[in-house]
Image (cartoon, rainbow, N blue to C red; front, side):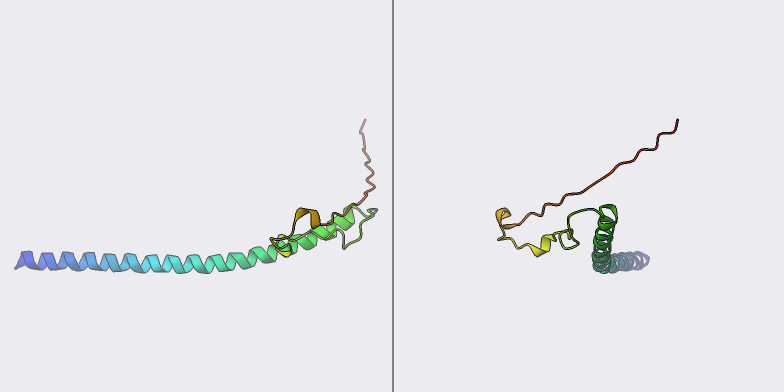
Length: 106
């Protein structure tokens, strides 16, 4: 009788451990899906912020550039479809007047 109860107890403990393991696995998968969605949204917002900063700093760093703000826009890979050939993309040439000044301490 004691051996039978010990066997039932061991089976119950193993079953509970298996169920707990399955619940933890499902919980981790749900957390992974949630974090992936959140991080994707944050990455998109960060990329938009970086693009706007890039445009502003390009205008600050190169104020004498012959390019206007429309020409400084970065081509978005999503805006070019797969069928677009390299030959059909117009390249914008800009001339930039850069003056370097060096302060030499003697």
